[in-house]
Length: 354
Image (tube, rainbow, N blue to C red; front, top):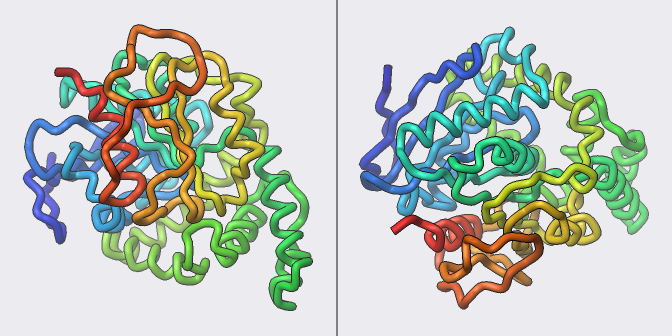
């Protein structure tokens, strides 16, 4: 059963589709400005964050629907999913679900799927692509989690330094209450998220309170009041299930082995992915082609800021080549829209089948 939804931008395709994903009830909303555009699957991060409530924000800031058939997917246990689905989450199960939804999207469109993964969603996209290489055209990973222990230590040191540098008394008290990592419980994880957000490392110029209010308004619009209560409950349930698995994450010890283009984007204010971590990614073995870019903004929403220090994948690269490392690209078109849109468009348009 498909349901049409209205948006503030003109779309030729806008459908919300229920999916049965490995015994779980999940939802994907697919949007495009016109027919026959190549598919792009957004894999949300968090972990535990829903996505459907953020569709208007994606469309306002990125407008990816002009170049792609965009799939906005609420993962297992997210949004207004039933309790049993939220309580069935595990790291392995989430990867299997990405593979299933990727296979469905590929089957529906008969085209290779670009995956836009955010935070831990980027890591899940990399892991899923290992098993479904024929269905994936490229991956754009925004601040992916690669080594949890190092990221946790870097963010903890950042917060301690901010408190020492003359932060307010309230900030010093809040930082003092934060225990050193690892963070295995939702409360500690969320306390750190609040601190990082208030210091501008999640979204530039936005405090945790502002982001929370925006999230609640979006959730009520997407899920209704009762559904929003369910979505908030699910966030804690999913966090409690995933955090023990994520704490040992180490892509450098067990790198994804994929023969597709990968582009990493990091914000220079991203306290969880400082250069000491992000700069190691291009040296990972087993990936056909890696490029990295940085924006001068925060972790995720890098509005109107094209990546800097970036070797971008271009249309003239030899896809038959193998090996690892960053390959320099021909001059790419200038980015006139927000950074993520430009990266995704440049990356994927250069590899569209003729």
